[in-house]
Length: 92
Image (tube, rainbow, N blue to C red; front, side, top):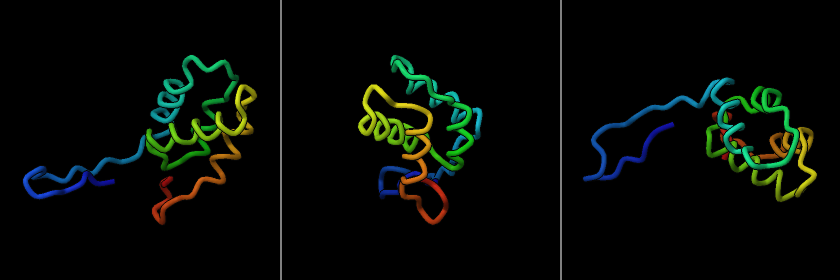
């Protein structure tokens, strides 16, 4: 992933790799804080290889919008499977 390059704004391009499994677990736990749902974050993290923090947030937002208070690991995994991905495998 690259930072945007615009004249006068940036003089460097930073390449950032998506978070690994441990990073995705930490991100998911952060976004699930305050949500009264039993989500297997390790399972979701393993199923979302290549996802960025923003993609994980979008994933959880869509799952909650779809299932409401009945959000579960199965719902999150189904939504993750249905999210469009870029040619590099990252979520859009």
